[in-house]
Every structure is written in C-alpha cells, then in structure tokens.
Length: 339
Ligand code: BMA
Image (cartoon, rainbow, N blue to C red; front, side, top):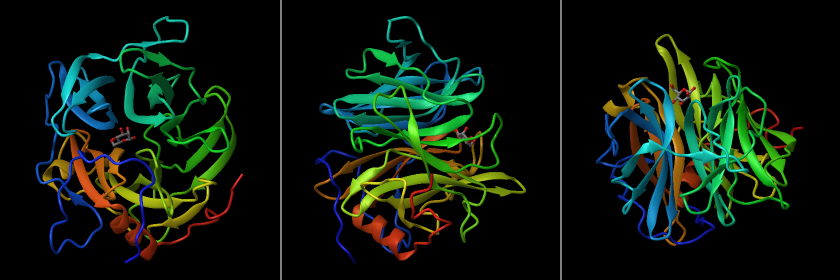
C-alpha cells in the first residue's frame, strides 16, 4: 500500500472512528449517524446537504435548512466536536458590498471554503432559475454577498481552497431549469471573484459503471494531497424508481486541476442505511464538506442523506487514494486540458 499525505494543517479534534474489520470499501459510516435528525430546529423540518469548517477552536457550519413551508434557506451553526450542532433559528443575513439587503429567495446545497484568510459560501440560488450564489465572511457575523458568478442555470459550485496562478478556481455544473437529467463538471478562473473565464471541462458522467451514468456534480472542496487534489463528488443513475445519488472519488492534477489523474470507476459510498434509503427523497448521498487532519491522514466526510438527514463517513488519505488509483478509469479526454 502506497503512503500518501495530506497537505495542510493538523486538526486533531475532528470526529473519528476506526475502520470496522472486514469492511471492504474505502469509506465507513459513523456508527451514530444520522447526526442531525428531523425537525432539528424550530420552524425547520429537515437539514441536509450542509457544509462545515474549523474556526478557531470550534467548528462552524452553513446548513441547508428546509423550512416548514418546504423552501430551503441557509442557517449558521456552531459545534465543539463537529457532531452535536447548535443551529440558529434565523437565516444568514446577506448584505451586498454597499451594505444593502441581498437575500436569496431560496438557497440550497452550500459549500464553505476558506481561501487565504476569508471564508466563502457558494450555494444554489434563484437568479431567474437555479444559479450560483457566492458570499464571503471573515468572522461569521457579517456576510457580504457578491455578484452571482455565472448565468443560470448552474449548480454545485465548489471553490478550490487555494488560488492557482493567482486566480480563484470555481468548479460548477451547468444545467437546466428542472431536475437536470444530464451534467458535467467544469471549472472557471477569476482574479477577483467578479470576472470569470478560462473555462475548462473537468469530467463527464458515464464510464464503465452505471452509478454515475446520468449526471455528476462537485461535492466538498477538493483536498490537497501529495498525489493531487482529492475530490469527492456525487454521481447519479436513473432507475425506474427515480434518481440514485452515490459518492465518487477522483484525483485532479495539483497545478492544473481540470486534468483528471485518476478517477474511480466504482462508487466509494452508495445508499445502504435506513437514513439514506428512506426520507423526503430516498436513495440520496450528497457530500458537501470534509474535515481533515494532516498529521494522521484522517478525513471526515459530511453528507446529506435522503434529503432529510446529515451523516458523517470516514476514510484516510491512504485508504481512499489507493482505492481510487487501483480502480481508476479514464473517460474521454479528461486527462487533458479541454477547452
Ligand atoms: C439535486 C439537488 C440536491 C438534492 C438532490 C436529490 O438536484 O437539488 O439538493 O439533494 O437533487 O433530491
């Protein structure tokens, strides 16, 4: 087994459990899942597809909160252990750069990514249809919402946690106004988060396995490793009973992250537990965040389960990179720069 490393800092207090004996796959679930149950906060019926990060000696989260009228909004939460969360009953209050109200009419599937000294929230917002919203904060008290980066329709916006050649890098999944029965991952660059260009194709749905045959979309912010950027994403297959969302894994080139180095032909996690198979939308695993400890190589993955709950799953940099490399396939020209 090759030895790989995580590039970054130590974070010894992330949630962790050892791999159960006899488990074949590269990822294992937290035994106390789900960590967020139904009706978790007054006025909120379900929380799922949410993002967390470390902040000082605590953890902070941006949660997709489905209100009791069914409309999703973003709520802030805090935790000492990244497992038990205190989630606000109030929505995050977004202002534009002049200090005026700039609230989304709905907001879902947030990602929370620190680039240099600033945290960015990227979510799916309403801009005459599904599009990407972006906001920034340094203190989680004031949230400045920037101009929407792209035209509609687009979902699954994920920032790279590091600039490349001085530019921000944003992964996205262009789509249509409905439930999008197609979709590939692209990336775009910007010097200032306002003007975007240098668009590149990263990867498509398809390949040998059927689990990602319909569409794919970015997941948590990619994790820097000695072998490249480790990115978890969701892959969707269409069944006669609706879509099934599984988690996939890919390693992208460190300097040119639109180039795929290794892409796992198998899912790395698929719906199996009751809280994944049964809920508001059954059979959905939707990863939006990770926490990792560079000292031990441990990774905790946060995922939405069945559009109803939040779960955690674990792996290590060695387990997951070896599994992806050992089961890798190349689809189309994704190993090249595609423009
Ligand atoms: C996608 C998004 C996700 C959701 C998934 C399954 O299109 O809307 O928020 O988890 O569908 O319903």
